[in-house]
Length: 450
Image (cartoon, one colour):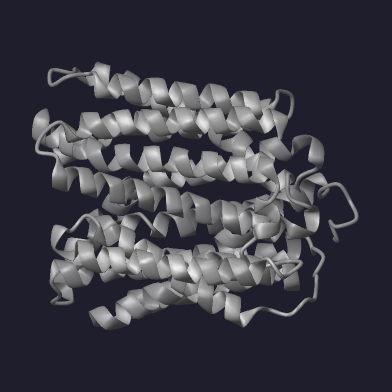
C-alpha cells in the first residue's frame, strides 16, 4: 500500500511494518554494543593485539557515522523502503561474512560493510515510522522505536554474555542471519511505498561528508590519548575545513545532503542541539560510572552491570509512555521536564560520595533514566515532524547523526577529564553532564517561541 496519500497504514499492515523496523533496528543497535564483550576472545583467536582488535568496533562506528546522511539523502531520492530493505540485506550478508572471517583484516572489513548496512537501517527508520503510523498516534510510534533502541542497548551485554556462555563469538553475528532473512520477507510485503524525489545523488557532498564526520569522530577519539593530541587536533581542523566546504555547497541546493534547509528552521536546530547535549551527558556518565563503581566502591564487573541497569531500564519504560503523552501534551514541556530531571539525577550522582549504598546508586540512576526517557521521544517527534514530509529522510538521518555526535563528544570529554584530572573525575563529569542537560532544557524551552 502507498502510505504517501493516506494517514498511516491500516492496523494489520501497520503491526507487520513496525515489526520489521523493530527487528532491523534491534540488530543494528545490538551489534554496536555486543562485540565489546567478545573483543578479548576475538583478539586471542585471531592473534591480534588489543589495539588492533579495536578496529572491529571502530570500523563499524565509522562506517555508520559517515554514511548516515548520504543514505538518508538516497532515501529521499529513491524512497525509504528501498534504502531500508537494501540496508537490511547488506547487514544480514555482512553478518554472515563476519562469522566466517578467519583473520582480523577480514573481520574488520566485514564489520565496515555491516556498518554500511546498519546505516541504511538507521538513516530512514524514523522517516518510515512517519508513514507507518497515523499523525494522531505518531508520538506512540516514535516512542515504540525509542523503546526498541533503549532495550537493545540495555540488553546488549547480557545477550552477548549469554551467547558466549554456550557458543563461540561467531554466533554473535550468525544469530542475525535468520532474523534478518525473516525481516526482509516481512519488509518486502508490509513496508509502505513512499514518494521518491528523483533528484540526482550528490557524490561530491557524500565525499565531503565522509571526510567531515570521519575526521571529526577519529579526532574526538584521539583526544583521550595524551600522546596523540596534536594529531587529533589536526584531524578536527581537517573536519572543520570539510564541514565548511560541505555547508557552502549545501547552501546552494534545494534538498542538500547535509540538511541545512532544515537547520534553518529554529525549532529543528534547537531540537538537534537539545539531542546532542543530552546524549553527550549520557555518554559521559556511561563512561565514568563503571570506573567509579569498580575502583572507588570495589564492585565486580557483574555487579557494576546490574547497578547501571536502572538507567536504561527506566528509559525503556518511559519511552513509549512519553511518546503517548506527546500526542496530548506539548513536547516542549515534556522535554524541559525530562532534561531537568536528568540534570537533577546527574547532580545527585555527583554528590553521592564514596560510601553510596546500592539503593542510593540505583535510585539516582533510575532518576536519570526517567528524565532521559521522558525527554527523548518527544524530542525525536519534534525533529521528524518539524521537517516537511518529503524531507523526512534528511531529518531521520540527521537525528541519528546527532545521537552519534553527542555520544562521541561525551566520550571524548570523559577521556580528556580522566587524562587531566587526578581525582574526582566521575563527580566532575556528572556536574558537566548536569550542566549540559540544563543547557538542553533551555534550548527546549526556546522552541515555544520558535
